[in-house]
Image (cartoon, helix red, strand yellow):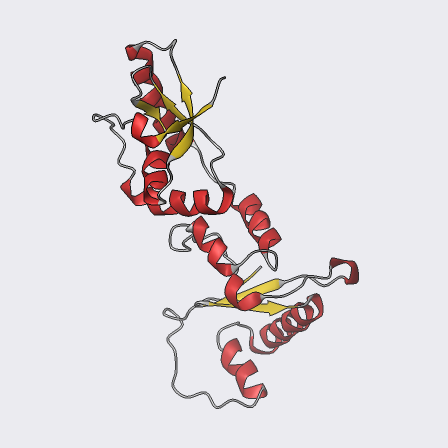
Amino acid sequence: MKVQEMKLSEIKPYEGNPRNNELAIDKVSESLRQFGPRQPIVVDKAGVIIVGHTRYFAALKLGMDTFPVHVARDMSDANACLYRIADNRTADYAEWDIGKLRVELEKLIGHVDPIDVELLGICEAEWPALVVPDFESLGVDTDKAAGVRANLLSIGKYRIVMTDAEEAALMTAVEQYSEESGTLFGFVRWILVKAGFEVRGEVDSAEGQVATLV
Protein backbone atom coordinates (compact mmCIF):
# COMPACT_ATOMS: atom_id res chain seq x y z
CA MET A 1 0.00 0.00 0.00
CA LYS A 2 1.43 3.32 -1.06
CA VAL A 3 1.13 6.14 1.45
CA GLN A 4 2.07 9.70 0.57
CA GLU A 5 2.11 13.00 2.44
CA MET A 6 -0.65 15.21 1.09
CA LYS A 7 -1.90 18.68 1.92
CA LEU A 8 -5.18 18.62 3.81
CA SER A 9 -6.39 21.28 1.41
CA GLU A 10 -6.09 18.72 -1.41
CA ILE A 11 -8.53 16.26 0.15
CA LYS A 12 -12.13 16.73 1.25
CA PRO A 13 -14.65 14.89 3.42
CA TYR A 14 -17.44 12.88 1.86
CA GLU A 15 -20.62 14.94 2.18
CA GLY A 16 -22.80 11.88 2.66
CA ASN A 17 -20.66 10.30 5.38
CA PRO A 18 -23.19 8.36 7.52
CA ARG A 19 -21.00 8.37 10.63
CA ASN A 20 -21.18 11.30 13.06
CA ASN A 21 -17.59 11.71 14.29
CA GLU A 22 -17.92 15.07 16.04
CA LEU A 23 -17.70 13.74 19.61
CA ALA A 24 -14.49 11.85 18.82
CA ILE A 25 -12.54 14.73 17.27
CA ASP A 26 -11.11 16.05 20.54
CA LYS A 27 -9.86 12.61 21.59
CA VAL A 28 -8.30 11.92 18.19
CA SER A 29 -6.71 15.39 18.21
CA GLU A 30 -5.08 14.61 21.54
CA SER A 31 -3.93 11.24 20.22
CA LEU A 32 -2.36 12.91 17.18
CA ARG A 33 -0.69 15.46 19.42
CA GLN A 34 0.87 12.77 21.60
CA PHE A 35 1.64 10.01 19.12
CA GLY A 36 1.60 11.68 15.71
CA PRO A 37 -0.13 10.26 12.61
CA ARG A 38 0.09 6.46 12.77
CA GLN A 39 -2.75 5.59 10.41
CA PRO A 40 -3.31 7.16 6.99
CA ILE A 41 -6.46 8.73 5.66
CA VAL A 42 -7.84 6.80 2.68
CA VAL A 43 -9.25 8.81 -0.22
CA ASP A 44 -10.58 7.97 -3.66
CA LYS A 45 -8.95 9.13 -6.88
CA ALA A 46 -10.86 12.44 -6.64
CA GLY A 47 -9.44 13.13 -3.18
CA VAL A 48 -12.71 12.44 -1.34
CA ILE A 49 -12.25 10.70 1.99
CA ILE A 50 -13.31 7.06 2.16
CA VAL A 51 -11.88 6.28 5.62
CA GLY A 52 -10.44 8.74 8.11
CA HIS A 53 -12.92 11.58 8.54
CA THR A 54 -12.18 11.93 12.26
CA ARG A 55 -8.44 12.00 11.64
CA TYR A 56 -9.00 14.66 8.98
CA PHE A 57 -10.98 16.99 11.25
CA ALA A 58 -8.64 16.32 14.18
CA ALA A 59 -5.65 17.26 12.04
CA LEU A 60 -7.37 20.46 10.96
CA LYS A 61 -8.07 21.30 14.59
CA LEU A 62 -4.37 20.92 15.38
CA GLY A 63 -3.48 23.21 12.50
CA MET A 64 -1.66 20.51 10.54
CA ASP A 65 -0.99 21.26 6.88
CA THR A 66 -0.30 17.73 5.64
CA PHE A 67 -1.20 14.17 6.59
CA PRO A 68 -0.26 10.65 5.43
CA VAL A 69 -2.77 9.61 2.77
CA HIS A 70 -3.43 6.47 0.73
CA VAL A 71 -5.14 7.11 -2.60
CA ALA A 72 -7.30 4.09 -3.50
CA ARG A 73 -7.12 4.61 -7.25
CA ASP A 74 -8.22 1.03 -8.02
CA MET A 75 -11.40 1.20 -5.91
CA SER A 76 -14.75 1.68 -7.65
CA ASP A 77 -17.34 4.10 -6.29
CA ALA A 78 -19.45 1.17 -5.13
CA ASN A 79 -16.55 -0.47 -3.28
CA ALA A 80 -15.59 2.87 -1.75
CA CYS A 81 -19.12 3.17 -0.40
CA LEU A 82 -19.01 -0.37 0.97
CA TYR A 83 -15.61 0.18 2.58
CA ARG A 84 -16.70 3.48 4.14
CA ILE A 85 -19.67 1.82 5.87
CA ALA A 86 -17.85 -1.42 6.74
CA ASP A 87 -14.93 0.38 8.35
CA ASN A 88 -17.24 2.32 10.65
CA ARG A 89 -19.46 -0.68 11.32
CA THR A 90 -16.76 -3.09 12.53
CA ALA A 91 -16.30 -1.22 15.84
CA ASP A 92 -19.94 -1.98 16.69
CA TYR A 93 -19.17 -5.70 16.80
CA ALA A 94 -16.11 -5.51 19.05
CA GLU A 95 -16.30 -6.04 22.81
CA TRP A 96 -13.91 -5.38 25.69
CA ASP A 97 -12.33 -8.09 27.80
CA ILE A 98 -12.66 -6.25 31.13
CA GLY A 99 -10.07 -8.44 32.90
CA LYS A 100 -7.40 -7.81 30.27
CA LEU A 101 -8.31 -4.12 30.09
CA ARG A 102 -7.84 -3.78 33.85
CA VAL A 103 -4.40 -5.41 33.58
CA GLU A 104 -3.39 -3.03 30.79
CA LEU A 105 -4.54 -0.01 32.80
CA GLU A 106 -2.58 -1.13 35.84
CA LYS A 107 0.57 -1.29 33.68
CA LEU A 108 0.28 2.46 33.19
CA ILE A 109 0.41 3.33 36.89
CA GLY A 110 3.51 5.37 37.62
CA HIS A 111 4.55 5.45 33.96
CA VAL A 112 2.25 8.02 32.37
CA ASP A 113 1.02 11.48 33.24
CA PRO A 114 -2.56 11.62 34.58
CA ILE A 115 -3.44 14.07 31.83
CA ASP A 116 -2.37 11.49 29.25
CA VAL A 117 -4.68 8.91 30.83
CA GLU A 118 -7.66 11.22 30.23
CA LEU A 119 -7.21 10.42 26.55
CA LEU A 120 -8.70 6.98 27.23
CA GLY A 121 -12.01 8.53 28.24
CA ILE A 122 -12.87 5.60 30.50
CA CYS A 123 -15.99 6.07 32.61
CA GLU A 124 -16.91 3.66 35.40
CA ALA A 125 -20.59 4.32 34.73
CA GLU A 126 -20.11 2.74 31.31
CA TRP A 127 -18.08 -0.21 32.63
CA PRO A 128 -19.29 -0.92 36.19
CA ALA A 129 -17.24 -4.13 36.25
CA LEU A 130 -14.04 -2.16 35.71
CA VAL A 131 -12.35 -0.52 38.68
CA VAL A 132 -10.31 2.25 37.08
CA PRO A 133 -7.14 3.31 38.93
CA ASP A 134 -7.05 6.93 40.02
CA PHE A 135 -3.75 7.71 38.28
CA GLU A 136 -3.55 11.26 39.58
CA SER A 137 -3.63 10.32 43.24
CA LEU A 138 -1.82 6.97 43.12
CA GLY A 139 1.68 7.91 41.98
CA VAL A 140 3.06 4.71 43.50
CA ASP A 141 5.89 2.40 42.52
CA THR A 142 5.04 -1.28 42.52
CA ASP A 143 7.90 -3.45 43.78
CA LYS A 144 6.84 -6.84 42.50
CA ALA A 145 10.23 -8.33 43.39
CA ALA A 146 9.45 -7.66 47.05
CA GLY A 147 5.96 -9.05 46.70
CA VAL A 148 4.30 -5.66 46.89
CA ARG A 149 1.66 -4.67 44.37
CA ALA A 150 -0.84 -1.86 44.16
CA ASN A 151 -4.05 -3.39 45.51
CA LEU A 152 -6.90 -0.94 45.22
CA LEU A 153 -9.85 -0.39 47.54
CA SER A 154 -12.57 1.47 45.66
CA ILE A 155 -14.77 3.73 47.81
CA GLY A 156 -16.79 6.26 45.88
CA LYS A 157 -14.41 8.34 43.79
CA TYR A 158 -11.38 7.31 45.83
CA ARG A 159 -8.86 4.57 45.03
CA ILE A 160 -6.93 3.59 48.15
CA VAL A 161 -3.64 1.76 47.62
CA MET A 162 -2.78 -1.18 49.88
CA THR A 163 0.16 -3.54 50.05
CA ASP A 164 -0.40 -7.30 50.14
CA ALA A 165 0.16 -7.28 53.89
CA GLU A 166 -2.40 -4.52 54.43
CA GLU A 167 -4.92 -6.35 52.27
CA ALA A 168 -4.37 -9.54 54.26
CA ALA A 169 -4.85 -7.66 57.56
CA LEU A 170 -8.06 -6.08 56.29
CA MET A 171 -9.41 -9.44 55.16
CA THR A 172 -8.58 -10.90 58.58
CA ALA A 173 -10.58 -8.08 60.18
CA VAL A 174 -13.50 -8.80 57.83
CA GLU A 175 -13.43 -12.50 58.73
CA GLN A 176 -13.19 -11.73 62.46
CA TYR A 177 -16.16 -9.38 62.33
CA SER A 178 -18.20 -11.84 60.27
CA GLU A 179 -17.55 -14.68 62.72
CA GLU A 180 -18.44 -12.53 65.74
CA SER A 181 -21.54 -10.84 64.33
CA GLY A 182 -22.81 -13.34 61.79
CA THR A 183 -23.07 -10.57 59.18
CA LEU A 184 -20.93 -8.02 57.36
CA PHE A 185 -23.42 -5.21 57.85
CA GLY A 186 -21.92 -2.66 60.21
CA PHE A 187 -18.33 -3.68 59.49
CA VAL A 188 -17.31 -0.22 58.31
CA ARG A 189 -18.72 1.39 61.45
CA TRP A 190 -16.96 -1.24 63.57
CA ILE A 191 -13.53 -0.73 62.01
CA LEU A 192 -13.86 3.07 62.05
CA VAL A 193 -14.71 3.04 65.75
CA LYS A 194 -11.68 0.81 66.36
CA ALA A 195 -9.58 3.43 64.58
CA GLY A 196 -10.90 6.12 66.93
CA PHE A 197 -13.42 7.83 64.67
CA GLU A 198 -16.83 8.93 65.90
CA VAL A 199 -19.56 7.62 63.62
CA ARG A 200 -22.90 9.40 63.76
CA GLY A 201 -26.23 8.36 62.27
CA GLU A 202 -27.35 5.06 60.83
CA VAL A 203 -27.34 3.82 57.24
CA ASP A 204 -30.07 1.63 55.84
CA SER A 205 -28.45 -1.57 54.60
CA ALA A 206 -30.44 -1.38 51.36
CA GLU A 207 -28.92 2.00 50.59
CA GLY A 208 -25.36 1.35 51.73
CA GLN A 209 -22.50 1.74 49.28
CA VAL A 210 -20.39 -1.34 48.64
CA ALA A 211 -16.61 -0.98 48.42
CA THR A 212 -14.90 -3.26 45.90
CA LEU A 213 -11.53 -4.84 46.67
CA VAL A 214 -9.49 -5.87 43.64
